[in-house]
Length: 302
Ligand SMILES: [Zn+2]
Image (cartoon, rainbow, N blue to C red; front, side):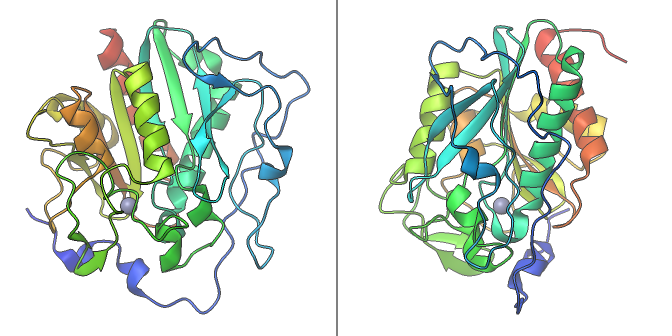
């Protein structure tokens, strides 16, 4: 069944007179025993990430959902306005599962909260990272958009570019979000955020990648003409989580997306769209990630 365009992101179309604060996740406050930095040879270690990231606010003083960076963090790159894009690494295995939230922020900022909750979970229970695995989590791919709070402008980066129309598979200067034209950037990878993420993906060659969005409710297969490697990942995630799966996003034409680019690089990838724009749907997503780990490592998991 095709999703109707009107069923996608409906809250994004509603005016909101006052941006609502995004709750901060308190469960992963800096611990007294920081985890030592993970050995990630190709990544830039951050011995002392900017502590102000955890408490920086919007122009109106609204707190934003940013965890305080700790020992096992790294800087993926910088946003258009110079904010660090922070990644978290758990496990030392050779097989990487990449999990990205907040490529669209604004009304989709619950994906930031979700990935922050996942970070807190893997910090608290490192044994849930399977042997042979490394989990790489990036809660906020678009930190400039996040500080704008819940408003449409928060979907885009500080240059007004839609970061999920800026990637190098089927990039088009004519790009859409539902029936609206959006700015895909001057060319593929014109934006520092997509450059940084693509560099990370090229260097780490993850076994699979999940890009979180809301709220089209379903798992949409990355689908590049050069790829076609993502169907099995979508099935594994869908069976574990209960989200629908089995097709690329088709409610309207999308171009230059992260998941399709990764698919074209031979990396199984999906867009996982949460059902709403508020809840994090944590439990079913944790189930999906555990199933993905089992699939990647060939483990038998029940
Ligand atoms: Zn999105």
